Length: 355
Image (cartoon, rainbow, N blue to C red):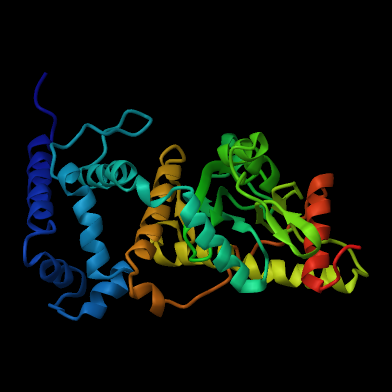
């Protein structure tokens, strides 16, 4: 069989692209100057220009590069789409970065150690007075533009009639992700997503949120727990707001404090979407098998910016909105032990202790 038409031309283009990637790699002194010139048409040495594009400081960027440099400089792998089509050189670089971050950056997203958890509890209590609180949980939707003519895409249609993938996250007071699960279609609400997670299974088995109880005045004991909105079930280790009308003053006060505390989860998800353009808005027909890994790496990068105390995040606007067009969902599942714990905290926070 004769040579495929255009093969030499494509190989030459890929070779030139590889040379550009190497030349622009971290460690070559003028990589940012070259990149800046290509995207703006002129040379810009302003550090703010770098930060406005990458949403992180050079310090954080250099650290991320140090994590993945060896893997990215290795021989190109033969990545392919699910249909067997080989990825372009640029896409292969992207996926080598994703794989390298999954391996090298995994320590930036983990459940807290015991000493870390004590600091987390203290910070949560400082926010609105909730004692022994270990995290705030929330979900967000990563929007996708999928062809509606494909019947298999119906499972991705959520309750707002949009195609989306769900991301569930447990967040600490510094907006750091401590546990995430993603990949489930938008047609699933908070309850089945939560129940499918390893986090749920560990909490139900008693291998997570199993630290020491806190003894409050009048021998009122409170176990470890996390908090969520009304879309989540009320469980012995997951507290949600009181629902209904004509609530007592104590219950209203509890709801206010819960809402003020769980803002950290809303802000973390809003900042995640604000920082990484790849998960902003609607993604055009993404590979749904690869998208969860992209989301995970975005969460890793989010945490790295926090761990390195990146000053750029301090100048970014702090928003509470991450699913602006989504209405609040309500769950009527309530465990008796969860109700008891919530009532105890409600009385404690309102100053009315049990007899």
